[in-house]
Structures are given as structure tokens and as C-alpha cells.
Amino acid sequence: MLVRRSFAFKCTLLVLAWLLLAIACVQISPRVFWPAAFGALTLPAALALNLAAVGYWLLRNWRVAALPAVVAFLTWPHFQRGLALHPFRPAPVAEAGWQPVRLVSANVRIFNVYPQLRDKDSESSRKFIQWLAANPADILCLQEFYNEPAGGRSTEGSLFRSTDKIGRQAGRQAFVSKTLTNWAGSEFGMAIFSRFPIVGRGTISFDKLTQNHAMFVDLRLPAGDTIRVYNFHLQSMSMDEKDIVDSYSSKEGLKKKGLGLMRRFKRGIVARSVQVDTLVRRFERCRYPMLLCADLNDVPYSYTYDQLADRFQNAWATVGTGVGATYNGALPFVRIDNQFASPQWQIGELEVNYEIPFSDHFPTSAIYWLPKSATATAAGVE
Image 1 (tube, rainbow, N blue to C red):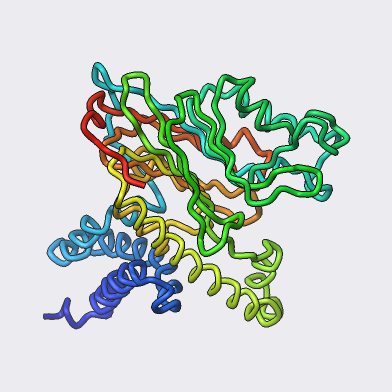
Image 2 (image 1 turned 90 degrees about the vertical axis):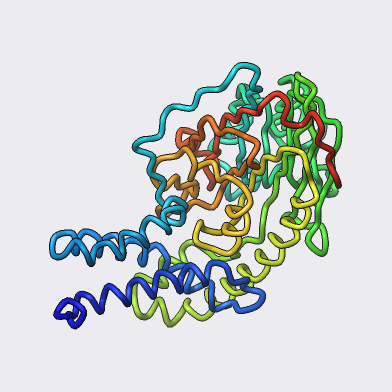
């Protein structure tokens, strides 16, 4: 009775209620009720406090500790979304006859072609394209892609002939989904490059075709199986990094920047909720084993991520260790770039390539294994 009346016990119950409410907020579409997105963002704090409650009550009263411990066990998949821990996970072993697929996903930031992004002699652009061209990956999914045709206007000559360098010259087929071709013939959009034959392809627009859209290819593996790979880039926040830092560094900054940031945050989360719902409907119509590469522009504790994680394996949450931050900027611990796999796949590994700092996103590299008969009787549906 004394325990139930104690301040610590009441705080524990409040934490449990907060945790359950935050999980509910993650599952509410911002299109229906956008303030729920703010509740979802508090989920990491609620998860951490619940674990603290487990430790506290283990020292005070193990019977009470059972309550937050059971909740921690049931909500562990949510914990893994933001901080992946696999202390007892055995090294994956591919069985005989399983087919390996090596996949790289990267937001290449138009290879820094704009003057404000370039460095001396366009060294970062050159190195990034060379790294992608030489990469042993079977498939490359690139967001914010840029390509110049032969005889393009850049002073570097053939430097930005990226489709040719990453594609044909590297032994890969290319599918470029173009959202803009300017007066000089330069192409902007997204791209998928594959060493496997491309037997189908398509583009998915969100209302109208912009930089934020999706594309897919159907690939024929050596054993004859067909897989589908999606590459998509969801709505950005359109929020300047400096404005975000200023907003939480001082009260004046919050007053000056806060309201504008709030409006842009709302527009972004609502747009992404509509976009991910559109994609989920398409995913549900496909019976091929799927791999997804995405710049979600959203964190693991969001409706966008939740809709994908409920249906697919997130590669980092499955095999990674730590936060797995992919944003290359002043905001720490932000993972907005993700790879997902449908249940047929075994995820071998996923690595964030921190040694490739040529964009505001770090690339991610993964190895997947597919049972040989996984698509023997499957049929894809557009």
C-alpha cells in the first residue's frame, strides 16, 4: 500500500501512460491530426524513462519493477528503431543456394554542382562519382541525382556525365527518373543503377512529378528470380539548419524562428504522411520480394517511418548497432536515410559510410540474401 502511495510509483505510472500515448501518436496520420507528430517525437524520452524506472524499482522493489519491465519488453521494437542494440545476435549465415544482393543508397545532393556547394576543383564531386562508379554494389539507388550530357556546359568537361560513368562504364544498366531537364540538357531527378538486368520500371508521382517522388525497377537475378527495388525521396522540411539551431539556442531565437519553423514542420509532416500512404498502397499490390531505399526526411519516431516499419524489416534496426545517423550536418543523431526489406529477405549487414562526406547525407551500404525459390511462383503487379 505504501508503494502505491509513493511519489516514485505515481511517476512510474505517469511514464507508462506517456509511453503508451506516444506510441499511439506515432500511428496517427498527421493528415488527420498533425499535433500527434509532436507527441510521437517524445517517444525516445518516454522509452528511456521507462528503462530508468526498471532500474530504480529493481533496487527498491522487484515486484513493482515487473510492470515497467514488461512494458519495456513489449515496446523493445520501438526502442530499436532509434537505438539499435544486438548484443546476442549471431553473425548471419547464408544458406546454400541463397542469392546475395549488394545495395547502396545515397542522396548525392546533385553532386555539388551548384557554385555554393562546390569546393576547389570540384574535388568532392569527382570523388563521389568515382566512389559510386567503383563501388562493388550490384544496385545503386541515388536521390537528388544530376547528370550532364556529352558536351555539357560545365567547365570540368565530362566530370558530371554521371549516368555514363556510374552506369555503362561500370557495367550497370541505368534508369533515370527525370524531374527536370534544363536548357543545357542537364538532368535532375533520381536514378537506379543495376548489374542485374532491368526487366521492368516505373515512376510514382505525388500529385505532380517533382524532386519528391518514387521510382522502381524489376530486376532479374542470376538464378531467374525477379525482385523489385524502390527508390524514393519524400517531402523535405524546407527548414534551414541554422534556423533550427538558433531556435533552441536562446529565447530570442525561439521567438524569432519558432513560428516559421512550426509552419514548415507541419507542412512537411502532412505531405509525407500523404506520400507514404500512396506508396504503401503500391507496395501492397506487389508480390515480388522488395527492397526499399529512401531519403525519408523523417526520423524513426514518426508516422512515415512507422508505416514502413510495420510492413518491412528496417535494415539498421535489424542488424545495426547504435543510432546510425545519416545526416551530415550540425544536427546530431539524425537518421533520415533508410533501407527496408520485405520479409522474404535475410539482412546480412548494413553500414553507414561515414568515410564518404561529400553530401549532406552519408551513403548506406547493405548486403541482403534471398532464398533461391523466393520468387519462383510470384507475380508482380504494377
